[in-house]
Amino acid sequence: MYETWQHVFKLDPNKTLTFKQLDAVCQSNTDAIIIGGTDGVTLEDTLELMTYVRKYNKPCLLEVSTMEALMPGFDYYGVPMVLNSQEKKWMMDLQHEAVKDSIDLLDRDRILAEGYVIMNPKAKAYQLTNCFLPTNDDVVAYAEMAETLFRLPFFYLEYSGTYGDVDLLKKVSERLDHTQLIYGGGIKSIDQAREMAQYADTIVVGNSLYDHFDEALKTANITKE
Image 1 (cartoon, helix red, strand yellow):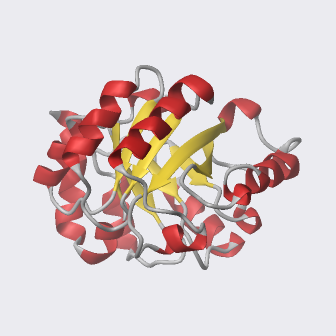
Image 2: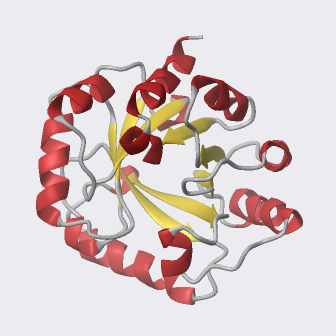
């Protein structure tokens, strides 16, 4: 079950790893694989990546960033709700579309809302969803909303390629008792993975797989400590 995931690798259908690298990712100590990306995600690329990952016994979650890539075959489906977006469609409208289009296609127990707060103004996801940069107090309040108001399964603090604020992550973790805290962004070494794993229930390593593969692969070993 996703509640036990400490470490997750995120694979982008619009980026490339060799088959040897994909094998290493899927054979690593990571607890699960997320497939998803911000732009250029197609049904064909998503299907090809999912089919390859499915050769291995790893739970696999599709992050639904585009309806074109929505398909059966995944263990879970994460539907992002961007809490610091300035546009309602990224909190409600696209999620409504995703559920409407999949209501007779997917098991409702497999569809999970992800309460996102995106913290890097230079990130594609930040710009696409028209976010504003929240203060630390804003972020803590969003976490409280995710837990008590919306009762979301996930609260995802996303720094998108930059390494985040450990102290802020600690503050957020202190507000969450039931909502699972996910951290993503800038983890390039096992030491950074350990630092963020002190406070996050789950850490996600994605971009560094494409830039610093060998070091990124080592981060999965925190699940065995």
